[in-house]
Structures are given as structure tokens and as C-alpha cells.
Length: 244
Image (cartoon, rainbow, N blue to C red; front, side, top):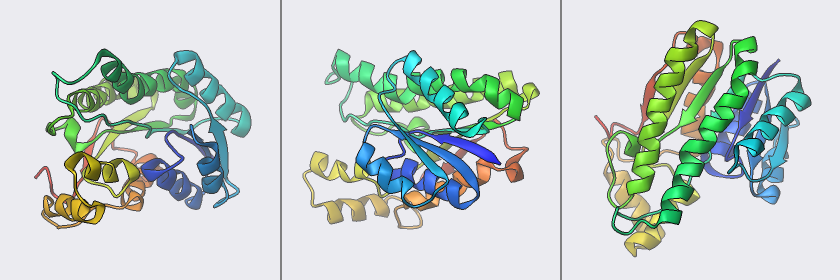
């Protein structure tokens, strides 16, 4: 039996990852803020349990990891999928927006990883962080988001080096455009019709399409599995060639 904890699991990539892992035979703790949406995810498989709450403090993250271990008896994989995107350049970014972005996109993955590590060391498990191609090359008017996602890549590499000899793998997946509510919100930012906006985003990629959450989930299921046992400290782009 393998156990995974997935954050941001109420929608988008996180929900797709929780369902895909359950389909692959994992027991999954799906964590997020939206209880109703989490229940919809859990209805897909009896392998999925849910946890609803705020993860902005380290004590909350400790509690989530402990509750996952209590529920399933251990932990083999942590998927840090929760994230926020606030569109603003440096001059427009308020103190609160900067802090909120760093908390959700960087602090929470660190807190959860720290809490999970003793269990992952015991299980010789792994962590999969979800960054973005904007963590590799900056996007416009997203200073805090770019910074947080770039830092998450370095956090991944640091933990991979530090804990690889303890049997723990740590990798980061960097999607390009993905058809999620977060991406669709960009239509309002650009003052465009949603369908027109998504077509524009798709045109940036050499393969001319936007990824689905299931596309990203498929890669994460592989990276989390023993088939990827030699993949550690990797920055895995899944962007249709966008960063090529």
C-alpha cells in the first residue's frame, strides 16, 4: 500500500493528481480549503480521504501530515500542488500580496516537507513540488509568483541533495499553460473572452495546445512511482516545448 498527501486538491491540477494517484492504487489524502469540491473529488474513489483547512502556519501543516499518517498508517509521497497567482509587477505588489504569495507558494511546501520528512525517510518515499515555467523564465506582471516558483525549484534541489542518501527523492514539475481556473482568470486580466484568451495561450506553445490537469497528473504519477527511482532533484518541464 502506498499513501500520498496532495494539497490544492479541490480543483485543477491538485484534484487531477489526487484522482490519478487513486486510480493507480494509492491511498490519497486530498487537502484543500473548499470542502464541497473536495467531497466531489473523494466521490470518484473510495481510496480518497479529505482534509479541509488553512495551511498558512507551520502548526497547520504539522497537523495535516499527522492526520494523514493517522488515517492511512504512513506516508510515501507528498505532492505540493496548492498555489496562488496575483498579477502585479514589483511597483504594484503590496506587502500583503507579497507575503500571501510567498506563504502559499513557498512557505507551505517547506513546512509540509519538513513535517513529512521523518515519514518519507522511513518509507524511502518522495516529494513532488509543482512550480511553473514562470519559475524558470519570468512571466510579465507576476513578480511575486515568479519569485516564489523559482525559489520552490531551489528548495527542491536543496532537499534532493540533503535527503537523497536517506532514500528520499525530491522533484519539481513545471507546467506551462494548463486549463485550470487559475489560468482562466487571466482572461479578465487581459480583458479578453475566456475562449479567445485560452487560444492565445495555446498559440505560445510549439505544439499549439494547452495542457489539461490530467496531462500534468500523468507525469506526477510516474515521478511518484518506483519506476522513477533514479529521478531525483529533477526540474521536469511539461509545457509542449514552450521553454525549448
